[in-house]
Image (cartoon, rainbow, N blue to C red; front, top):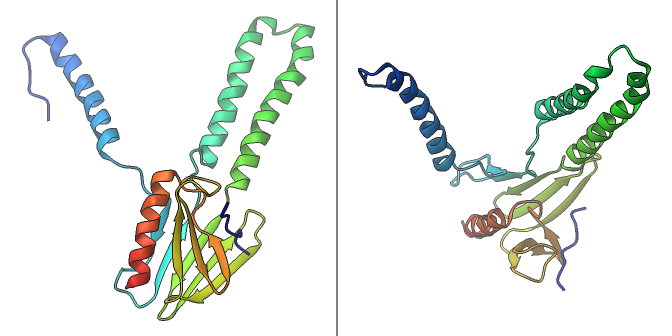
Length: 201
């Protein structure tokens, strides 16, 4: 099974009730329309123009829960765990339960922090006149690099035979390295097409 090397307005209505309810309905409809029509941004970005002599592509994993969201989630968890203990205020039983509550909150925080840290990955692909260079920065800060003549670089997509569906790799100089393996399946398909176009320019 091929597997690449990991990189080194409201109109007024007479009825008062309708006049109050209509804006709310419009607000809900507007929110739903925005949610449907606004596609989420891709977790990769070409930082240069397509016609620029040097092109640079940045890729990063999805971060569905940013740092602020994580803090809010932990605080909400702590609050929800405390609510059942309110009748126990002033009793010894509360002090017996408190360490277990704190332990549960710490466990949630630790799991979220670990997931956040492990997704601190960036990949930067640079295409210059005759060189293709890929640099990957891992969660611990170490980097891995791959470089090849761009005219010899091959973009391959393994639809079923890779670690993930539509697994995209770059091949050249006797090495095959993965790129954007952390992206979603549709994003990897789009990435494959974009890389082929970019390398042919």
